Length: 456
Image (cartoon, rainbow, N blue to C red; front, side):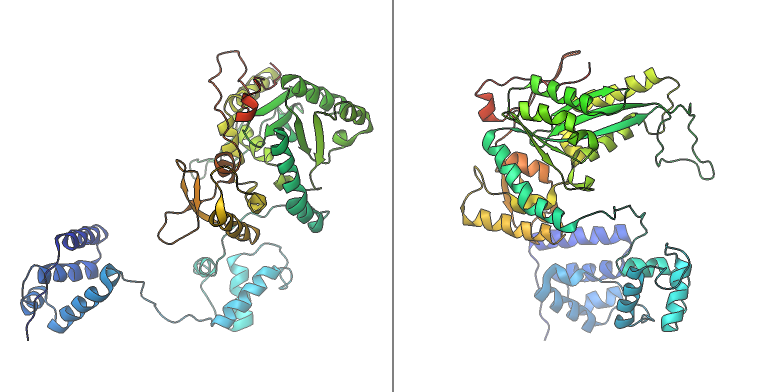
């Protein structure tokens, strides 16, 4: 018995879009299938459609039945499976264990895995021989990528880092919010006159070369960034870092603001020297010092700012004189000094794994919002990047859903928008005039209008 199906106008438009996409991608299977559905939906008999497209009528009926049941999902084709893998699931799991143990543990003389080593390992352990060019694809399919390793100090204390992350840091953050204080992460950086190297695009076979004066001289910079607003304090010098120079820098910062200041610093000797302790004691009413856990630069977001300043100012640059180096670095420092938003963008997601410590404020209220924060906190603590949908106009965070557009969590932006009072935007600084401070609303009501310090 012949029956006919009519498609609505909306369904026909969607199918036409899929058809155009199929033509752009050259997907013959999708083109034939959608054409058959459109013609049947236009009222043409199935037998006539099948004959025109060179198909069997049973095929067209099958396509129509699946489309009526599954909708557009029936038009998606997966990859053909290809020939069976040489390695079983258990062998792949064992291969991953061997790769994680490292090449030295597997008996090879180098600490770096190469496809030739992996080829020999698979043949030795499982009796299968792969082409070493294909092994890169196999490793990617197993979740591996070719990466450069990084150094990690053997003095790391995981328990101390955990305590700082889960107990000390939430306490510091709550104190800063309660007191309306500047929460400053501090560090120092050196900018060498001989420049710095970095990756760049260049012609094959022609390695980029950068002239260098070879002079062992560097511009040394003290820096502090405000965790809430991105406000940047800095001061440079040519002499080496000392406790007296650090004290002078902190004294300048204190003179530039009447707000309480909380400084988080690393364990550099001049940070903890006996010579600077009387200064800390004298200013303890406004200045509070906390130590970051040892050998933990990943807990200090200003490290990312230094990296960006060097990329902007010294990478692949030639400085024949120290004055040229100073002028170029000062330009980079002033740029971030005048653009706190760029500072927050530079530090990115450094503190993302702290999200679980925060609590709801302002519009973030009620059980549903608290459950969302706790859920994302669990993902962050497990090392899984949370997925969120941001609606800035409502300051609202939604739990991840397959129906929501997801973006990587930008913790700094969320904190400023949703978990702390909004930061008043700074006015555009005029030439030669330092940028205004960025107090939170309750500080603005007190009339705080201080300026960050600089060496100019």
